[in-house]
Length: 414
Image (cartoon, rainbow, N blue to C red; front, side, top):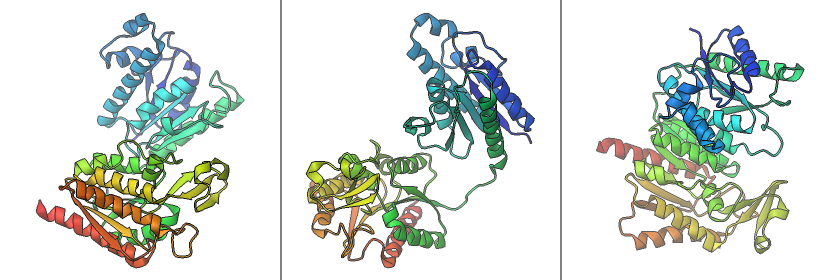
């Protein structure tokens, strides 16, 4: 069965380029559905879904959009319209991949539709801004969007753009052909957060959970990882959470490089999904190179992890704030929450003799948890203290089995 690739394009300005891309994709054996999201000029090629249909999906018309003479509002309307059209096609089983070409506006428009699709649906964006110091977060979000730098501007066909567009066509068709639609996981799935300095614990915990019959998806503690994990909770794709490395919470509270998103832990709490939370790597604030560390924090214990990352030890008051944040966010959870504190140290760097070992600061975390538990009587939190270090094998086994216990209790109660 042929794969169908959706092409999102402003056909009033880039008709020649999109026509070339369409032909290249079809030469490789795939079908195409072209969506026109242009607004003012005349389309330079035929589309399968016209700009008029895109506007109508938003309850308006191209004429009405143009009449308002508001460029930003027009782009926003067409962006949301394309997103809606793409999702309708996906729900009908007519999207096995999506691709686009564009500058800043085209990239914003097309990737918004791409991000609405689940992980595993191939997404390729050929963009003029996929280079240099451009920020990719708004284009990628938490999804598997592949960005290809156009090298030359997307304005006509030439020796550069033809090669790049052929490369993009090969990428999207190859991805679509390689995706196994039958890759269905029947095992209950666990989300696990990990940092480089908590890897030994993560690896052992994953091994134990897999032996217990779970599939484990690991997310890096880079801020966006936890967001992607919690989106899967919203989609009912996860059975439990082992939040081993909530470092993003510390960065979010104290202006670090990898902050948590605004609603961190809210979804997991509302869904009542069983959780075990450990303050792995939550004992440091991440800054850029050493010169980026604030003057007020340069007298603390710190480690120059690499030329662009410096780990600065969080003090007692900051650790208490992290504990309070987690307790406040999870205290009224509809499901069981266990917070396990490894008193032997929270990371590879935080161990006896380690460069940021400072148990007098770390104890602020548990104190913050207890403060909130004492303030609010209905706190649905179990606080467990362990003498082990976070990367001790017995600790990893303990937390994996605790999560399994919570999941079993929830399952048995149904």
